[in-house]
Length: 390
Image (tube, rainbow, N blue to C red):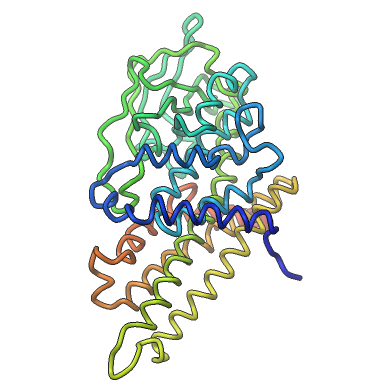
């Protein structure tokens, strides 16, 4: 049995690749050096319809012409030339749009989705905190209901698309009470940008993803209307966990793009670089490493698009959840290995920032961390096998 994308998906891949190579690739290195977030290009991505691939037509989305697989294709192709723009799309859709689309009221969807789907605005997803990363249930941010307003106090960290000039809101998890069993009641609340008491702090000086927008956030007596509760009160934690399952497959697609870039660069370089009277690609020590990249690419791509296909086919939550974790742990760890191999193939040049393999090397590591670490994925896979792992 084989697994292949449809002709429509392949046509879409070609259109996104053309966009990525013409609008992003020529500038990616400079954006990386300058730590520049290219708002104009993000909006062009919106014009191309990339932010609306999972959204209904009534909000400006692709409707029946789009699906989760199409989103993964777009993320892969953007990530092939620039991981920063790939994560911008991934977070903009998976963490910004989809929670509102899945759990929002009709009024919330009408208010926020048209601009987000069009790429005129971005939204962030505030889950991680200084003391609550993988242990997201340890959320310390609090929100209390005073009259017809939520008052939010706390802090979030490592939040993508949270402080750009076009960020319109950030959805955050917060403790809104205590459950009958004594555990915290965690809810999701939408906080518009510019709300008094909400501050996107100075952007991080990151190892990689220099052209993406990432900030710590603080909330000090931040008041938002009571109707900014997203979904059911007390279900915020469960909602965000379900959101992360989709995000893990999308991060896998970003990883596939990274591996594809490494393979393309190494094949080209190994065929051109001359040592000892011939191209280095004829040496088994190099050729075998490049062959390993092809193996990693094929396996990662198949795992990723299998998981995406399960999502589009409406597979059971447990089947999709397991497939998402498997794809995420394998493809992200393969991407990190691929960048190490590519840097080795390039030798001393691989250590120079003028060569893209250096940028991919820096960008790759966070793939094993974001949207659930490799350790968390292994824990989830083990649980799916019925093991009583803690």
